[in-house]
Length: 444
Image 1 (spheres, one colour):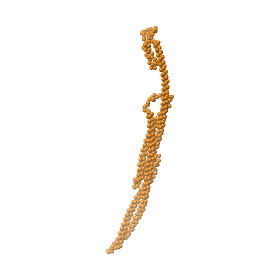
Image 2 (image 1 turned 45 degrees about the vertical axis):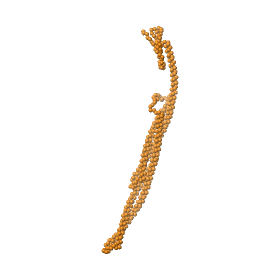
Image 3 (image 1 turned 120 degrees about the vertical axis):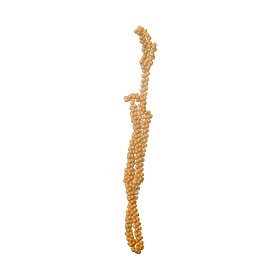
Image 4 (image 1 turned 60 degrees about the vertical axis):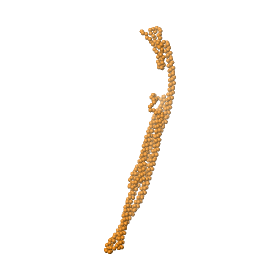
């Protein structure tokens, strides 16, 4: 049987290794056991420790146990201190977070109230602009009646006869009225378009404010819930990734500037709305006044024209009466002249018969005696009288013809002026009595 040399195992403390305590390697001299004496060692070497090794081993265990105990006590003390410090720090941090959340809630509530006030203001502005738009539409519709009246007046006056178809003051005022109504209609349409554009801008600004207000309501709800959470809240849970910085987040300055910009836009639109309302109110007042002033000018021109027509018609009727009287007198004069011419025929026949008979005297009896001379003078006188009477009769007949022409002209002119007066008073002026009132022209 061969003999074996047994070497002792190195000492290894697993607890010391776990605590990171480096073990000192025993010297090689201690690792090699000394051969023991006695009958038990006969023929081979034993693996037993020596007393020194035994003593060294338990002394090492005692030292290591003391070291581990002191380390454990230090760790326990440090743990208690760290636990207390972290607990205090956590409570302080949580209190700070709760306080900041409360301040944030107050700030959000303040901005939310301001947004709500401006939203109501913009909504009121929009409603007022809608009423203004309706007024403009009613005012635009109201101008159609004056326009129809003015154009109807021009159409009716175009049916005047002959010389009465004149471009007088009334026609000039009517044309001015038509041009004024057209320009007012164009202005009303342009202003209505401006009101519609302002309504759109108000609604856009209101929508931005409402979205901002809605976002702040949600943020307020979330922050209010956060402020109510505590260590005993059952609905809290861990969200490890929630502390990671999110992308596209705003800063307090940009958050405040965003709301301030929205409020600034709302204030601008509110100012623009008030300015536009004042402009529309003044414009409606001016256009209504212009229409009524022009209507009064047209009515005054109609009145003056009717007075001129009545005066001219009266003069024509007086002249017609005089002309008819002259026609009657001239007809009587013609009858007198005709009788005078007729009355001269008998004396002329007598004188001519006498001369004819006396021209039949024989021989020396055919003498130009005094009777002969008298008869010849009588015939010449009667012929001259007839010639004068016929000339005067011709003049009287020509005068009567001219008087008849004057009568016809006067009657036609009187008829024309009667027709014109009928058109002015019965067709135009009565129609103009239905001219819209000031309130209707103002859009009420």
